[in-house]
Amino acid sequence: MNIITSLSLATGLLVTAVQSNVSCLSSSTSLHTSISPVPASASFEPTLRPLLPPVYFCGESVPLHEETVARRLVSALVVNTNQNQALYRIRQRAASFFPIIEPILAQYHIPSDFKYLPLVESALTGFAVSPKGAVGYWQFMPATARELGLSIRSGNDERRNLIKSTDAACRYLRYLHNRLGSWTLAAAAYNNGIGALLGNIRRQQQRDYYYLRLNAETGKYLYRILAFKELFSNYQCYEGIISDRMMAYLSQPLKPASNDEDNDEVLLPESVVNDATKLAMNTATSGAPAQVNRQASDIPLPNAADVFQGGIKAQLAQSASLQRGQVWVFHLTRNGMADGKDVDEGDVLYAVVEDIDTRAGKLYLRADKLYSVDEKHTYNLALAAVDASTGRIGIKIPDMDQVKSGWILTWKAL
Image 1 (tube, rainbow, N blue to C red):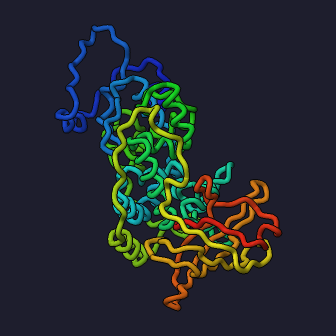
Image 2 (image 1 turned 180 degrees about the horizontal axis):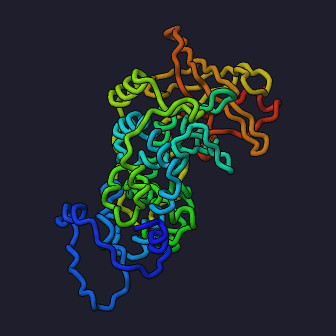
Image 3 (image 1 turned 90 degrees about the horizontal axis):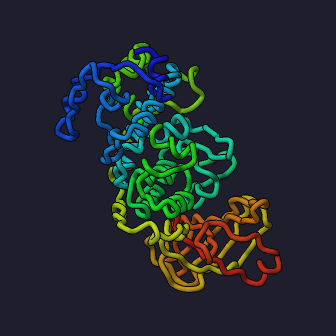
């Protein structure tokens, strides 16, 4: 079937019956009710279901028996297959980066289907920047990135670091799934924000992504992820929908991308891939997110404090100027625990002024080292100053009189 016919399918126009791919459908008859043949003389509303194989997202079946759902998936497939060269380049990136992303997902017990999410967000390009200011493979906004412990400094934006940004994305996805109890809803919340999604759930009294009425971007978001998954892992089953030319591109053996073809770090040395994979697989995790079985009205709006656990208090002992890169010294005001380590009153935090957001009136302080007075030893420790009332990283820019009077801040591990 050519691309014009495919577009007709995507827009809901009447199409002639297309023979389904028997080999793809027959393998799934145990999971789906078989479709009875329709006599040629019968009058019927055209349906896409006989053309599509069963599709799953994170083990959840996509309800392709719903004509609207089927058409949205076909539309996403058609849009993605309109750019042959671009899709081939994304395949090249995926071949290089998936071996790094997949074990990190496994470490956090995130389904591997989420490896396709950064394809939608950034085409797996580390230097991608959205019109709203989101940056990197996983397209984090500055505030969200800081809350997840990523450093954003001139010349060192960790949103562009594949391993660190993927680790942060996994922690965020765990949080979303823990709050929503569904991977499809977690994907939607990643795009639209959990607060906006919960508002839609409450107003509509509907918790199924496929039946929620969402804004245009979020309504298409999961279908775009599914389209990449199906095109990269199951394209043979869409012979009646994908053009012959695109079939050839998807079956074409991949060639390594050269630096002349892409300014981004598409290919990584094999040693880096191996080391990153071992690190992700061997690093201990705090466990999988718990399933949440609540009614929509029982789910509270999110607070960044839920993402981080533990907190300590420290009083400013020595300040420098209110400029980026300046080091401020704080003394802990009581015993506690930070990042799994016991800390004592009087221990010293060395904090860096990481950013000053005058527009939002926020100051971002990050402590990378702690000196233990009793042990007389300096430890590497990642802490950030947070607003004690909300748990969010970033505090109001103080006036210098307040700073000089002995400023006490709350710090939490990243």
